[in-house]
Image 1 (tube, rainbow, N blue to C red):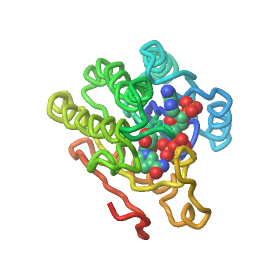
Image 2 (image 1 turned 135 degrees about the vertical axis):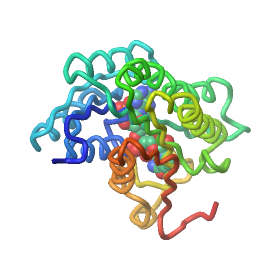
Image 3 (image 1 turned 180 degrees about the horizontal axis):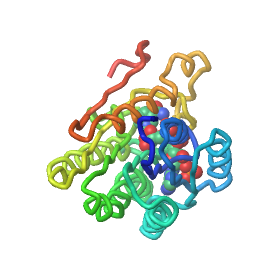
Image 4 (image 1 turned 180 degrees about the vertical axis):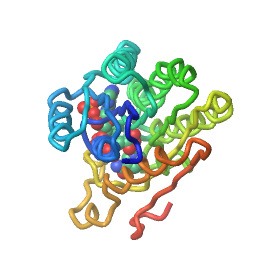
Length: 246
Ligand SMILES: NC(=O)c1ccc[n+]([C@@H]2O[C@H](COP(=O)([O-])OP(=O)(O)OC[C@H]3O[C@@H](n4cnc5c(N)ncnc54)[C@H](OP(=O)(O)O)[C@@H]3O)[C@@H](O)[C@H]2O)c1
């Protein structure tokens, strides 16, 4: 039997990068997937890929900052698949103007709204079901910038990821008694589309030495498939070749 047979996972940010790779990896272990992101056509191609491999999946297009989207994801999971075992909060963003001298209030709010508020909105939406089930795994894709502030990642991104790390901590403090466990994953640089928003473009050689989305997906599957009695609280993964020491 596959490690996640009969389990159901809501995956935000499933249209590309780490979220897409994680949805495929979770589905390969038997999980049924509810995929969330704004780009509906990308979600459709993910669904086709999961179904072509014998899995089951549904798409809920929209922004994670929208409470109605989180509610729709929960409803879809329950109507289609009957339960929610895993929430992967992967959706994340950054911008070209990311440092204190140029970010401004609107851009600060946009980044916090997706990276931190969006994660809370999804946690808030799944908790009643997980409490009722007396089990659930919530995995937050944080960042090295959630452990140490980074000028390369920027001020709002660093603040949002510190907040996301704290959210995992409170899930473990407040919800463990209901059988719900929180996991923070702290990737170093991963070669994904989000790096296209770097103010200084990366070379193909730099990208090739970075982590790949599949590396983080393997950590997601590991944390989700540990026995219910074990909570993997933190996983830090960095490229073997460190480009920028931080
Ligand atoms: N790449 C890295 O070096 C790195 C390192 C550490 C942590 N991370 C984190 O890893 C996570 C995934 O990023 P990635 O590297 O895989 O980059 P990516 O390929 O750009 O993926 C970002 C995902 O977030 C989704 N997203 C963005 N804004 C959204 C919104 N408002 N509502 C719903 N979905 C939204 C995007 O989908 P749509 O555009 O279709 O909405 C996309 O699926 C992020 O949280 C990021 O901060 C990345």
